[in-house]
Image (cartoon, rainbow, N blue to C red):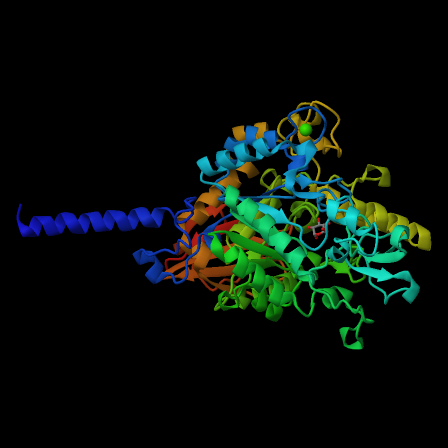
Length: 599
Ligand code: GLC
Ligand code: CA
């Protein structure tokens, strides 16, 4: 063989190797720790990461699929539906807490961090689930509930026994003989009081959430070590990351002073600005997170500036966070998710999402979501769930989520355009938040009627109703009595029906995930908002290495014009939610279209 031939063969193999590497941006091989791309593509796109390119699909296990007829979703239900999950084209599954729990707050009250909740199954089930996901190249992210445990956790059971118990300092106690400590607010307590008196040791304990969720004392190095070894336990099993529940609350000024005046009564901000917060997250990063190729996302109600402290790479803390500015928009300030009767303006909505997108243009990385287990269904809240617009507006919102410059967190059921159940009676709610807010308003003699009306739009249980598999009783979710009512529209809104329909929201979502996979410009491309003052249409371009996409989203139920400044007739349609997309600058009700600009 001539030297020249050998050289040609060598070059071809290099090219093949490079392209194989490009094709596996989201791979599950743990051997490739910190598998930054080394291909040519990475030279064009700096700082590629699998978790930036991933679409995260959130499953609320309690409501996904019940396999033993007790009315509660379980791990075997997820195992049964692995191929369905794979068919969505998603890369990561985030599971809400699956750990042992008395379920005062549906799993966010953990009684054993290294055991599986009885109703959900066993550790063997979990291992099988994880294996099944990895075989399908899907990563699994769990929920880290580090700020508090259940009061039924062994640590708390010990801690409350006496003041000299070895576990005493695992929680925050205040001796009653000193009087009542400075006020701390609780999210779920009927009276809003985060201090609970406990007779055995004549002391108060702190619970920022329910009285069955005592706050752990992170000042105690033993607590931190317990947490790190627990995280390590799951990573060593092969878990691919954690979503960190209310993580900025872990650090507290344990002298418990009055809230400083400069906080202007903003107790959320006061609680999340703990003096040693970043020290703890950095320690966690150093001791465990940095040792694995995993992803982390914090639940952090931060300002854009604060956000950088958590997610900039040189901070060595977390990969991403999700903020609340978007989802809290449209509620009247005051905390009980009362709907603003004035409605919400799209111009302001665009401003919020653009600000957050721009925030991470140079440093850090963002997330985008409209639904999760703490939110109502996105189509009811941000689209239109009237029968004629439910599917269209839901597809439009999915298009938004999948074309922004951030990692999308997509909530299970949104691919079917599931909508709010809108309970009439408080007895139908199972969520401690709705129930205790109701009791609180009742006690104060407040306006229960408007609260119940707002809950039809805002309550968390709207997003927690069981998944709708088919048109049989209980939507195929359970053969028993579901723990939370199934939306009666499962007769028409369900997987079986949507599989058969090429234009269903389900099949549209699959097109969106494959489009995002095919077009790195949708992940990394520069985001530019256009026609900013347009009150009906959200329009933006995404641009990368000479490729330019235009996304047009009509957020209203009426035909709406957009002034994009481009000659749309010359563009190529990549996807749209109408059979014939409008290219004349006028969008049909809730129309969404993704175009490639050629001019
Ligand atoms: C987070 C969870 C929410 C839970 C709360 C307390 O906000 O997402 O569901 O109720 O923390 O753990
Ligand atoms: Ca079950």
